[in-house]
Length: 111
Image (cartoon, rainbow, N blue to C red; front, side, top):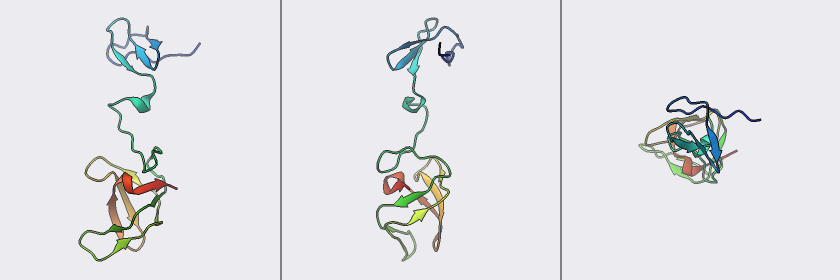
């Protein structure tokens, strides 16, 4: 028998599955069984919909102008060891020849 997690609100051990949801019979709280579907958990996805994680390597899919410079990040540039952050940009990274940058996940794909 699989072990279901306790209710996140009341810590009741009597949770049960109802389709794609878990339900607590004591407080009537419902939450997604799959943590990636939980609206409270931020999940970053690349341009193809693949889930990104800290430390991944991504490839730039569009020429990106660097603000305040005449430099351009070319299509196909590989960016290693990304760090996912909340804010106006989703990725903090260091690009060879350019330096520290912030990228949006819509302009990269997982390598």
